Length: 149
Length: 414
Ligand SMILES: Cc1ncc(COP(=O)(O)O)c(C=O)c1O
Image 1 (spheres, rainbow over the protein chains, first blue to last red):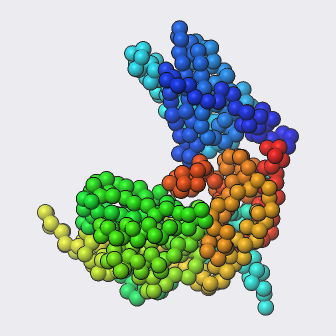
Image 2 (image 1 turned 180 degrees about the vertical axis):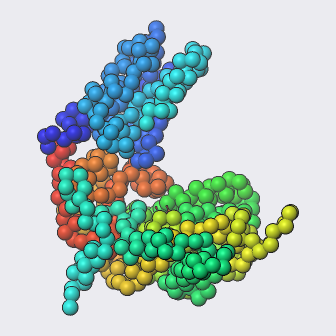
Image 3 (image 1 turned 45 degrees about the horizontal axis):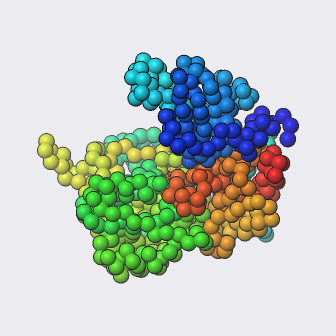
């Protein structure tokens, strides 16, 4: 179907073949989250080396939007500096998949899209608190994650 | 003489929302009735009539408006009692809905009657509202919560109930009359008779049964019975808890406050009579009054006719859905054993995606876990799609659903 504002080729493709799908054993960061509306769950795994994301994987059940967003998010942050990842925002993620319109048109489906980013922010938040003792960065991230949608 | 299908089609004119268009000017096909049903003009008008003409608090003042509103409110209690074949309308307690009714029993009855080591039995196909209150209670009392599992047909494995009852520790068996996901109708008589033989109390969550079939509380013989008005044409915020007078009289109150008292002194209070002992504070007057019109509406059609109409729709939908490749149906294959609720999955497409795509064709179904995550775990899925029918639905609407599902296959290139 052409012109579908959500189910584009790219989203369907990612939903069938998600990128970076799997687990990392003993990952430096492991964040689990769930969407209480539909019961979708994701697990995000990150390894950090030299302040960079050296490895990233995700795993879980989700709709096409959730799977596509997790895929794109993991692709976008791989190899990136933690300070950049900290600043990563929802517009960057949504525009990569042409889903910015969801913010306005679908308060329900936006949660599917941003579960990935919420997990990332909470995951890095815990990392800043536990490993880096950086409470200022942590506080900001925590607030951002809590206010994403 | 109209055919039955025509008579049901004719009801649609009473439901203003069914005329509206959604999305790209598509006719609304409303198949989310297990979540809440639409309301007829009769109900809507009764509510605005109350606010326009006799709005006032009940049971207190002696002025004209208060007398009218009290009478209309209490009249609903009588109508509910008659509808369920309850002789004493003081056994009808108005609550906010099924959830509040179950919580009332868990707190007011459960706290006094459940002790360490006791067992509460529920089932794998319960709504969260018939699981979480019992988790809270059993955790607080160091009691145990046990489940009757379901078999591959989506039916309860009752031999497990026998095992639980034989321990002599069971205090309450609580189950839904009809599953809100699988549509399975529970074998009420069998469960109640087993429990009665063991001297165990029974609570029935009737949220999905009372709206769709004839229920005679005089015959069922359970101890507690709860349901929600909004799933049977009534307004939101009104539900009913029924229990035998002897049980209610022995129970401690749930909420304390106005209306539920006889006399209040500085350090002690005596309770009001039934049902007011359990109705603290100003109740949802307008909606209780509206609820009476919903019951009258259903009775006019006849509960047996409603059951037959839904059975017809369910049979038709199951037949048509079986023809769609890649569609998985949950629950029993025998339509007579189920209500008008069909849960399904479509290939590996996530229910949220199915819901969004068919919504474009105006079809409203529910996608998700349906507040039944214990059951989802059992079925080994995160979520399902659920289409659920009511009096105003038609076979033509089912055809729209089927066509919309075919569109999902196209979008996902299946
Ligand atoms: C079987 C069952 N029990 C309980 C409930 C809860 O009803 P309410 O939300 O009206 O309290 C529902 C409705 O979703 C239900 O289907």
